[in-house]
Image 1 (cartoon, rainbow, N blue to C red):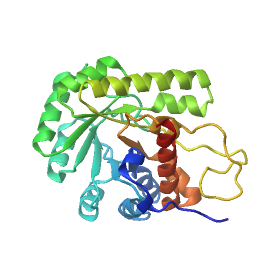
Image 2 (cartoon, rainbow, N blue to C red; image 1 turned 60 degrees about the vertical axis):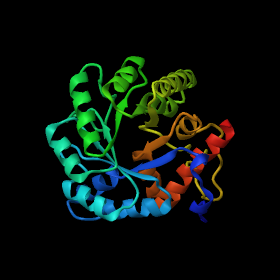
Image 3 (cartoon, one colour; image 1 turned 90 degrees about the vertical axis):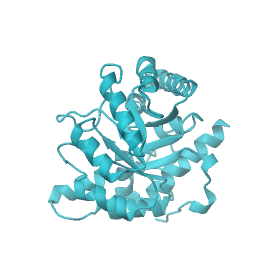
Image 4 (cartoon, one colour; image 1 turned 30 degrees about the vertical axis):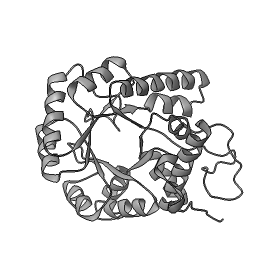
Length: 283
């Protein structure tokens, strides 16, 4: 089989949303054996070489994947912005202040969940969110709030002082995997309305969670692999990337899973190419 990688030099900022690559699942694989391999920091360096604009990671309270020493090593090793996802706890806010990442995304967190499900309830814990936004802004971090495409939450995010929001694309991604065309259309419209509302309130608008690439009819993931039958329907990544209101896409699980089959650099090239093509078709 042959592989083709889009040269990073051909990609420009206006062609697609910035791509934030979440490396949590590389750490999950490492932790499964309790050793040091595969190293998420090395994966992050390969991701940057492959074209990632931002490296995203989530330091959870239970440290199920990313560990504290990973955070400090990522900070020392990378020149691209780090996007530090964290719950709003005193411990996490202290670590963020010490680390001083360029970007922070505040997310909900429950011990029993497999991954982050649902958005942050900004309206319900407004004072706490507002305080965290102000504290992290003083530390020099650009703060984003991970929320659903709900007008109440989007408006609360703007009042709380967050300059950015990341809208939760999980419902759209689930509908896409289910091939539920009516649900896809409904979630697409809801996401677009949320993005536009956020922009009207002066917020920078991002999106992420669960986005994937199409799988060909012969079972291969869509990529530079030759001989794979091409899928005819747009991927969930393409659906979201085509929206000009999306300034950043943050993708983790599907990208790392794709890389297992085609390699990390190929996987990043494929996700970037998907975003670029979708945005160009939309303009």
